[in-house]
Image 1: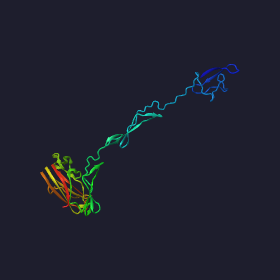
Image 2: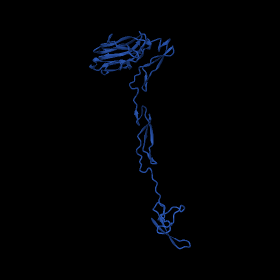
Image 3: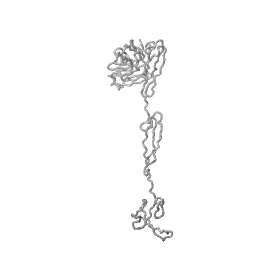
Image 4: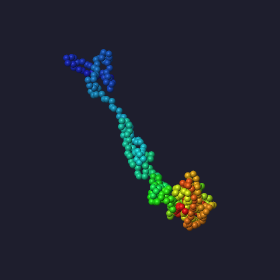
Length: 334
């Protein structure tokens, strides 16, 4: 409590001492007794709303409490981790600032370079979906009316992991089953883009190497472990529809070096399938196996094509040791 004595000269009156007692600083209240006097019996002067702010002993206004800063002590130096705003854009955050007690972090969007995309908040190189894709299995030809046919050209091109083929339109007198006047006289398939056959039965590919050289394909054994196994190359699958009820002939040239094993060396192979089973098959094992070292020689296989046939498969294979080369194989109707 503060007691302040002021000598006031009242007009026409004698000097009188009035005692003011302030409450504790900042409360703005006064203590009086029931009669309106101070506890010691001295009169009081109560503040009113029109009297203006009270003053302290020094004549100054009491100091108001300072407003609390909600950002006091907050340091905004932990921005969120980078994110992907979309598949091609990385969003990064920098050091922020405090607003109303909460941190706000500015962000920057950066586009990923060509050939990459945003993954887990960073631009990463995208694997080429066409790596290892060989586009040599075109769709079957189709008729465009009765006077022309559309033929898909092989090899095709790969984009985004999918093969596409250019179409060549052929004029003809009578298109049937996608063929002008029936099955074509000859259809040839270059071996430079053939691949290893992975559904050709019980073969052990680990003992062989396959590849292309000088526009031809080859199979080569890697050691003595290949004495009792085999490997095969295959070409594109051919629609059997135009050949149904007739005969299909495969013609190709082979060359060998030290070919042979527990069964026979090498040869062409030809297979006619229905949706559920193999209808006809020949791999030259029982007719004309290629053994030892031979120069380029032409071979052929004929098979019947049943009315239930849907696909024709063909290629070349090597049993045992050595190396076999194969040039293009042509399919025809004898």
